[in-house]
Image (cartoon, rainbow, N blue to C red; front, side, top):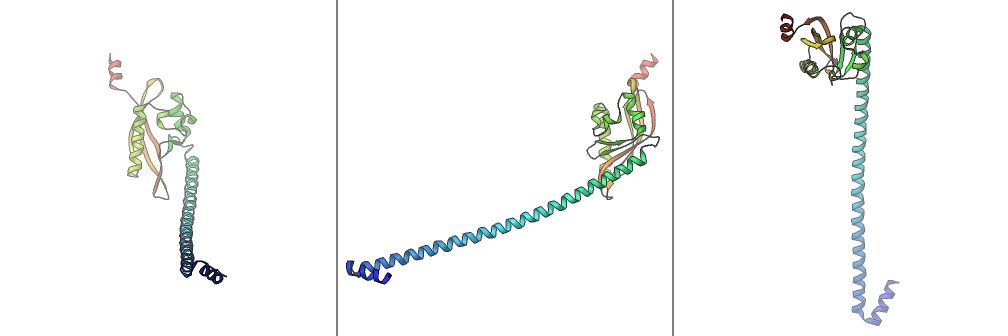
Length: 212
């Protein structure tokens, strides 16, 4: 069919025109093939990139699942430790408490509520889940926070002397032992505290007033 067309073009326009027409058709075919090859190459590249992206996404999802599983295990472990702590310390006759690493009160026993909180008109529910600043003045709460952070940093029990204002403005001083709570023996997940002695103290101004 194409040869008959070329013969007809040659008879009408001459062999030169027929040759030019043939070159034009062949050139277009080469151009079409080149464009098609380029499109196929780009398509393959896109497919390869897509496969890489899918594999990376699968790896990220897999790692995220592992991370979430580990976090769930940590939360379960901490919850179990807290329940054990509550059951073993709720009835002992000295104030005991437990905070998380952010300073939020997780647990305090009945003795802490009776001796420390009730005299200032507070209950356990006012402190649980809250920071020290929700209960104490700035100076007192900052001292408590400073001591908690020191225990978490040094990762060992430390004895402190801590003061607080009780009922009717009476100042108390306690011998306090604070100690880190660990997860799997390595990661600090909280700070526990025990008051082993409490006494009433008077500031210098109070002494001056009493002497006068």
